[in-house]
Length: 565
Ligand SMILES: Cc1cc2nc3c(=O)[nH]c(=O)nc-3n(C[C@H](O)[C@H](O)[C@H](O)COP(=O)(O)OP(=O)(O)OC[C@H]3O[C@@H](n4cnc5c(N)ncnc54)[C@H](O)[C@@H]3O)c2cc1C
Image 1: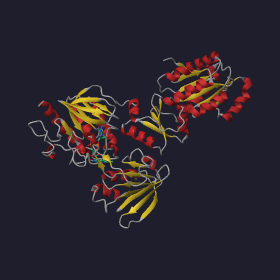
Image 2 (image 1 turned 90 degrees about the vertical axis):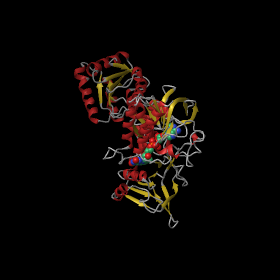
Image 3 (image 1 turned 135 degrees about the vertical axis):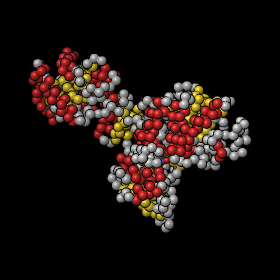
Image 4 (image 1 turned 90 degrees about the horizontal axis):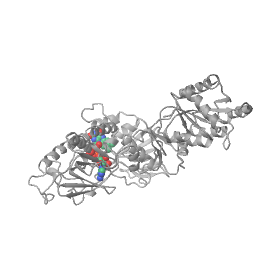
């Protein structure tokens, strides 16, 4: 790479970590001379970008902003046609407010330069000619670079999300990135830096969120498949045929993928949203073997993902499985983009999804103060708020404990008469010991109130029937879950609630068309070679450890099934 870059080249180059010094002068000879002198002294540690008009320089600054480049110093000539140096520096300030600003002036323009100190908060003005640079150019630039470094307000080279707290799609994108372990920085559209990024992206802020990738590409209100592709998550299978396709990327599916791939099966895992499943949303799993101090769902997911990939499993995200067909020995798995893959065996690990709260107003406020299960990404927004958690099971208890670290108060709203009926003893003890958590038993949410976001809740006392309205910052709902297995209709046997039947839970009726001499293996469904593990399986334990264990065990039965083919 050349040490000096013109504005256009700066815009197209892949971003890099060296802080940039920008110089703009409409006289090509002067522009080259300034850049040459700057390069001579600073070219090793800085990138020098030169432009020959204010507009070109602004375009380059905007693109550098999107890419997350650091701009340390901007030098602009005062007398330029179209946009003079002061006007340019004023606009450059909107993009890089913390870059140091220098105006290059002729002696005759000294007064203009002095005025500019107030207008654009000028850091220095430099008289032309600046020879010898050792005396006139380098000392002030050294000082400005030092001051800029000390400021420590440098942008970071990660993806950026500009959105709004009450915009549902913004919350969804944050959740998606967090649960897929994609690092990003959040900017609110109503804060100055968020506005600067929107301007640089040419977005008006009506359609949110705007995702700015590490390469500086701005995507306005992108869908999750588009986001997945841009942040490097695989969305299409590499082959047409696999030994094993695992449907669902929660603990059960990840367990199956790790064991399948490590034991030599060509394994594809298909996940419709983000790997980790329900466990990925847990703030602290305390009862998983080998982690006496607990670990977060994110940590568990990250490790499991890396482990599966290390053994050669292929992981697809944002691909939903919409159908399963039996074509002789092949099990054909249909994906929501219309494509299909064939496998010798399939493991169903699709878990369960939260039930929706039916109180009026709840749907309208979803992701605008009302959240299902997702306590992690919103936790920081709960600072100094009064938040409510609906539900009395372990997941609700864990969320309350976690949110209490951020919120002013956490109130658990529970329909039952006590937590003892549904929550583990250790959690009840923890909750009792946390001062800012209170529990309202025999209570339900009667209505969710607010204009464009949650403001109040109407709570009904189930003993008296009386309703009380309270101010509420956020509402988190954990009221049980159901399997989403409609797509298996007519192929795989399920119980009346939709849970998949397997092994000894299959009755004679389900096995009327069973084609083999042997009975189904444990975890095998009424279709040979199709297994069910984890929460989606009828009569399962609904625990992380049991889902992982069943994933591993199902792989053993896949081997036995394949041996008999
Ligand atoms: C907040 C919370 C805290 C919890 N804490 C604990 C705890 O401390 N200890 C404990 O033991 N258990 C805990 N649990 C329960 C535990 O997380 C579950 O038992 C476990 O995650 C079940 O794993 P699974 O793989 O069977 O299903 P899930 O975790 O539900 O994962 C299923 C995955 O399949 C995907 N999927 C669904 N349908 C499709 C489709 N058609 N195509 C592609 N993908 C699909 C989903 O998006 C999901 O990612 C907690 C649950 C929650 C919600």
